[in-house]
Length: 354
Image (cartoon, rainbow, N blue to C red; front, side, top):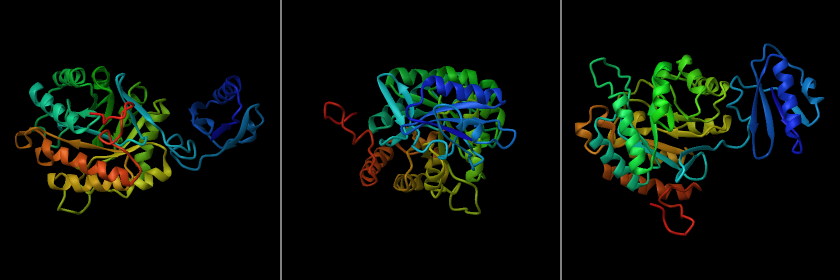
């Protein structure tokens, strides 16, 4: 149930709703929107009577939520959520008019490799840098990541290039370590239904990039986001990265129909990962273009200075010049769909931002 407050409701009246809900054994989630403030109630053991709350001062109405995902639903929040991330001198808003591109190698292999990748993607217009420190791989004999050493390299990238960092946390035990070095915690496709991990990142102060599982339905995907939000972390960014089908011409099948479906049902921003979604370098740019055209809020792209030498997923990583071309193309598409990129948005002085 959501309790919608009147526009003139005071903080004291809002607190009274929270206090009553907590006395009933419920958890109150305060959600401030542009149009209204609502108190979303979770942990409901049974049906509630709207009159229990509509009689309170400052309450406009109490509305049952029909979706199983309560906090992620547009029934709870009608306008799009904006996720703020980044460094003080380079803030980034995910979900707003500007398309956000996250780019970097699949895995951090060395300081030299990470710095070369960061220099190229930043120059081309990426706002955030991605790179794996812990790599859950299909085979136990493949490169598993540099661990803490990679996190320290990522911290150096942030310092040197002024880019916020996105990297994956793989279990509740290593989450605290990853939090020290990253600006966005990534939950990978294999962990989308790792409920212990979802609860742990739900208690984090860091935004969470949640990737769709390889066989997850839309409802299962949004329910995974709900696990995070139910713990109090409402800064969730969804990511479509392909699902497993019978197709053999591509690593995964990138489900771009998910984007408008999410936009209709949820207020959370959604990015697209065409690198994992296709698994083939020649398919990344065409599917990235398509993702922007159908309404994605941004992209996460694998870029490696020398993909042929990559220790992980080199066959789906773009060369720096290919990434530069991609940024030019999505900047053109952004204008058609009413969005901007860092390459097209003017700075306050009227110049093009670098």
